[in-house]
Amino acid sequence: MRLETGPRFPEDRGGVAVLGAGTIARTAHLPAYDQYGVGVVGVWSRTPATTEGLGRRVYASAEELLADPEVRFVDLATGPEGRLEWIEKAVEAGKHVLAQKPLTLARADLDRLPAVLARAEAAGVRVAVNHNGRWAPPWRATTLLLRDGAVGEVTGVTHLHDKPLPPLAGTPFDDVPHMLLTDYLLHWVDITRTWLADGGAGPVTWVQAFDSRVPGQPGEARNPWSATLSLGTGAGATATLRITGSNVASEPGCPFWVHGTTGTIRGSVLLDSDRVEVDDGTTRTGVPLTGAWFVDGFAAAMGELMCAVAEDREPENSATDAARSVALVLAARDSADAGGALVRVDA
Image 1: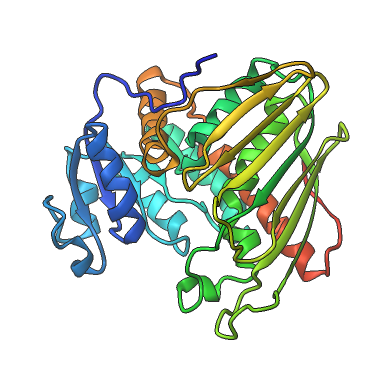
Image 2: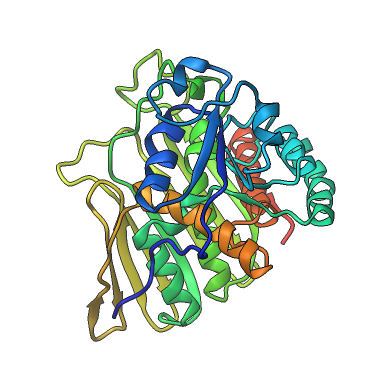
């Protein structure tokens, strides 16, 4: 069993400019583009020091970048605050946009988004979101298996976080309320929502979430280090995502299970734990994997946007689709604020 989980590109993969040159752009976006021959025209950052040593053209301003006729795609790698305004500016300049996730953490922006995307459609440009986790090889393989009906109808999805947390204390994450639920777990929420839908369980209709500090958590770490997020659909399928702290593990990873009416998919992602197998009740079949989330997933997110433009269709990671995942993490934030109350969401 071999699945095509890697990045896919059209013949012309040039004309990219990166707006924002923070850590993730320098360590993941640009290396991914280099690895897959994506033509990067240049970069701009509000902090000039972050562009030093990149070996690329550095624009004097964002306006110069957006006005460059060689730029067809803007990789918008800024923080979530003001992201919708940047998307609007790029659309007005006639550029396709790949926006960093989260698309936004403001409900008001979600309300404004349809009008922005309507203007993008009128301008003939596409707007996608860098949900690169969708192309992490184990997750992408699982998506393709579910679309092929490998385990029947999905009844449940479970994710565990069996690894240390990344550095959080003293970072901008300190200022994001319920950060694990609203930002860190967004990739997991996004892929879980996708699996439930692709597996025939339908859209998520309710969310319930808790977070808390844990024993041993440093005092300077302002956000809780434990979070449990549950989702459910109208068909009765459920999902649970669980982080129990910055965990100690000799073989760290993020294991997951997708249970269906005719079988189970088991796997893990990150930190050399990548694996996937399908269990039909009598036989367990491993799925060969190549590549890794970092950096293949980042290349694939841009590749999907480029293919969508070349094929005149909506990308899988469209802003419209990404907004549904944002709505779920905002509902999780509301649930945690209310002590874990169940929050209904529009299907």
